[in-house]
Length: 219
Image 1: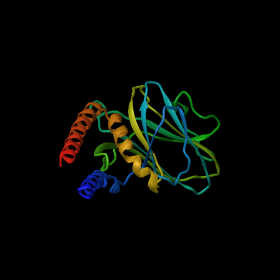
Image 2 (image 1 turned 120 degrees about the horizontal axis):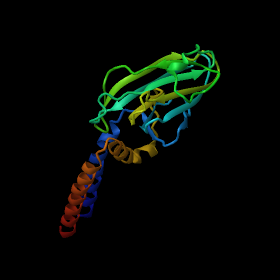
Image 3 (image 1 turned 60 degrees about the horizontal axis):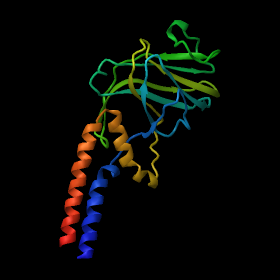
Image 4 (image 1 turned 30 degrees about the horizontal axis):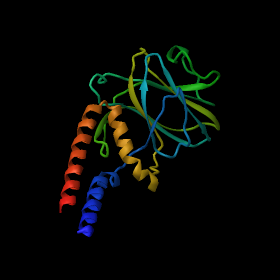
């Protein structure tokens, strides 16, 4: 009987982890900092951010001449954010001079810039968390020179909202991340405002587990 109980418990855990093995996504990150350093441009990162009114977020990285930069903006498909958008600008060496009227009040000085206003691109459905995102800006370019670069994100009208900024293309998940997937899943859904549904789901799952534990004890 002990073997059967262990087998059932192991099977239940494996079933719960099946979505994890099929996950194909950016490495999720959360930050409350105004300035965030990107570790490298290769690894696929996704930064889940709340953007308060009048706030500016800056992402910094060390770039090399000819290095490819992939970056993009997605808006979480949440009621009330249907028309929400942000503007993104890349500051760095050997970039063209930008119109200062289009730049945010606070930005890196003495650097050229490329401005990427919001545009409608393909929606993105993330299969692991079952969440939908409205596609906005996408950057694909080769850096013109070595040096420090800055990606600046702001909302021109000063409207608060949410966005997801992604960079890089190579998915880099280690074995230890397997145990973080459930935490990430929960954090993403709280980001989407699904807290009440999560609590209800947790209560149902807890009740099912208690039911099986009682069944095993009386078997």
